[in-house]
Length: 499
Ligand SMILES: *[C@@H]1O[C@H](CO)[C@@H](O)[C@H](O)[C@H]1NC(C)=O
Ligand SMILES: *[C@@H]1O[C@H](CO)[C@@H](O)[C@H](O)[C@H]1NC(C)=O
Ligand SMILES: *[C@@H]1O[C@H](CO)[C@@H](O)[C@H](O)[C@H]1NC(C)=O
Ligand SMILES: *[C@@H]1O[C@H](CO)[C@@H](O)[C@H](O)[C@H]1NC(C)=O
Image (cartoon, rainbow, N blue to C red; front, top):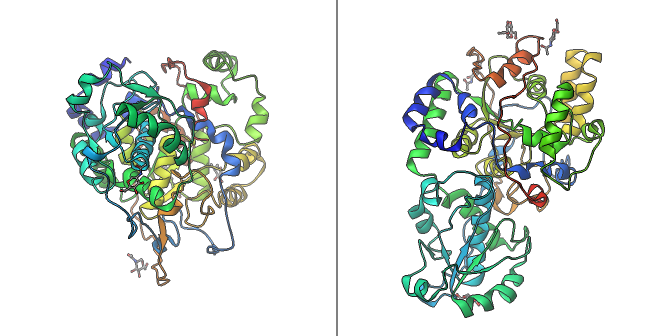
């Protein structure tokens, strides 16, 4: 399915189709997703912390639908009392442009950092243009995806954002603006020492390939600015939000709570992992071919990778995990995976009661962080290392024993407030500076009284694998043979950009 063709599908048609086939959206979008950096799951080991002390002990079975103690935490990103207003456009140190890079969510992270850099430099930020050359092969621009006027007005007390560089500067400017590329994760002082002098001299500077160019640890005011940008200033345009809301409404009509799974079980991901998924020589050959795109990836031992938790779970395994955790066969699952309509998947995942990530990509990270900020809505991330051992021994143990082992393997991977130590991990994933705690311990326990029996509605072919697990012991092995694996070349470091 070509990109052009996809863009011709009108929203009305999309909505109509969604009426019956919630999963179908993944069909449109499923085969090319661009936040490939997800496989920094390889680096997940030092990321996740589960502290039994300091936080709250879990007593008895956890509530799989709602994070315990979530009521005690809330998102906070107010400006401090000594926060100064932004420098006016005419007095600013110049115009800052950025060229974003990567998929929609990677660009979102880049733009968030650009606002912070503009603040550090007392620069005027020009609404960024999206990267049309990278994975995100869509010709939409910022204003097609995000509400520009809202973005500008929401940030008015932080940074002056303008839609374009005034003609006065444009005319005196050599055609492309002066460009600079800063090293990954540069500290504010780098910008002050290296970029500011150039900006003052040239008036207009464009920072290229602007992804992960700003340090993860910043002072509190700058971190909170990141949260204001990411969680408040970005608002999807009305047509996108409407489609997303419509889908969510459809889900809510069928069931009062649902799971969204960001499956991302697609050839590029699988090839990048170097793992084996049971498809025989055909799979080995095909994934081997895809893998050749990344010249820096050598041969790995698939079994070894699996033992170390470096392989994404198969749809079957995700189903097993959910079932073992206690989700019943009447649970509705929304399968998200794409990037082209990624904004809509984002909305439906964001609204879900439980979000399950099967990867560590940008969308998963941003949503996980956002869900913490918005009240610790449950986000489940498979503890692949422990689960892989359990899946191998699945046949050797009773369901009850498997289930309790899965539950204990998943402790600390359920999106609970106390599972990460503040300051650890990726800020987008765990925006600790923007999470505040109340001291009201009289929180309400939410007992789920939902006895409504909803049929597991599985329309997407991929979802049949969940069905296989959740409603019977028959499992299917579906392979996405028709998937278009034609991704552009991507530098290897982009995969690991998150780290
Ligand atoms: C930015 O402006 C503030 C005052 O609003 C000033 O204190 C600070 O030094 C300025 N920084 C730069 C890099 O111009
Ligand atoms: C849940 O069910 C119990 C009894 O089964 C009832 O007393 C309680 O009010 C119900 N709670 C809600 C929120 O419906
Ligand atoms: C769902 O599970 C219940 C038991 O919890 C079982 O009686 C029922 O047959 C299952 N439904 C399907 C469609 O498998
Ligand atoms: C498989 O079937 C057995 C009984 O036949 C049942 O105890 C077990 O729960 C089933 N497992 C799954 C994953 O449905």
